[in-house]
Image 1 (cartoon, rainbow, N blue to C red):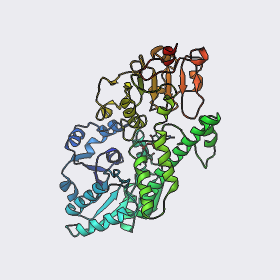
Image 2 (cartoon, helix red, strand yellow):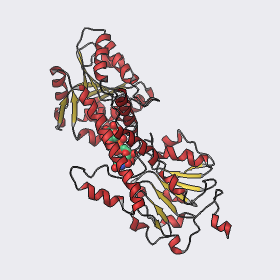
Image 3 (cartoon, helix red, strand yellow):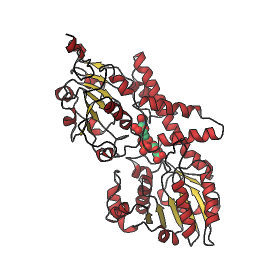
Image 4 (cartoon, helix red, strand yellow):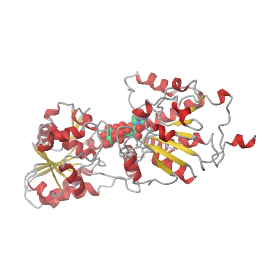
Length: 458
Ligand code: UGA
């Protein structure tokens, strides 16, 4: 089949490449001409596992253009994959979806199915269909289908080709047959439902996962007080198939382009309909607090961060992506800088995106290796569980750092690996390993100038 994909962000580009991989011809449209030129040169514009090689493999089946009028003219199937960012009140900004739909309406000259993959609040696709039909220039039939995606960054290609389910919100037989045909070769479970239910499946799924994470983070915080271990709790819970093993990892909160935005949008919608989702509200609040948990832990060791040399490992919102949107690092670094810390930061791929917000300066130095980052540091914050960080030899922390106090927001290291070495290791929902005091070295309190406070007292 031939289809048009409009909006070449994470969802759009991955979808386009996977649709080509499944044998379709795909016209890819975006307003960003630099992106289109890069894709014409076969350069993947996002960092995503297996994407570059599938793009190369299927490049001949794909055409890239900024000329949406030309792309829509003969289209019989258009997938809308543009963003629905958060507005200041928490609701979803639907202007990009609306604009794409209007452009399709103005230019399409054949009967056409518009498939909305963008995450849209419940009822949006009904309105889009009405608007498209009201604006269409030619006497053709346009049907709108809701087809939310469930791809996670880092595994997006696999999540698309081997989707857990394909959700199709359709309102008539013609649209239903067309999208069933489009997905026939995927051979994945299909959930056929109404457009509104399809939209709700997407929001409910993301919100449920966000709540699961916030719940585990609260349990982890309690574990720290009652001397229980969150990793054991998660393992013990996960054996129950009704709970499942996934998304039980406590940490410094969820980030990314989806959970923060989708929880706020659903909460906004629930209030709009006078059905406040209190569970979602709690998940959002817990997450906001959790993001700053390492700073609170650090304050046990420093009275202020002024002149403290801090190593920061991991900047992205999760591993295997260069995306820093709503990453906990973004909430923490301004506080550390504001208090006068001297930061040395490292991320295997996130540096370029991070530099758009935080330029290199005397107070913030980008490093190329973990060793270089740790060198001379008095505190280490870990924000992302990159494999490279998890497999780092813990014995190097005391060798590289001036004072090895490690605050790990992603539980990258086993407690055993930290035993018997001169470090203080604090993680989330687990015991603190204190190999400094244990060695009679209790001088880990530092004053605001980065000097050891106890040194000064003596
Ligand atoms: C999420 C969903 O997982 C996808 O199914 C969905 O399609 C996507 O949003 C979307 O709406 O487009 P994504 O944001 O890429 O995908 O990443 P996740 O792997 O879900 O992680 C989100 C955040 O939760 C990360 O910050 C991660 O570190 C955190 N997380 C995840 C935890 O803190 N604990 C966990 O156990 C799992």
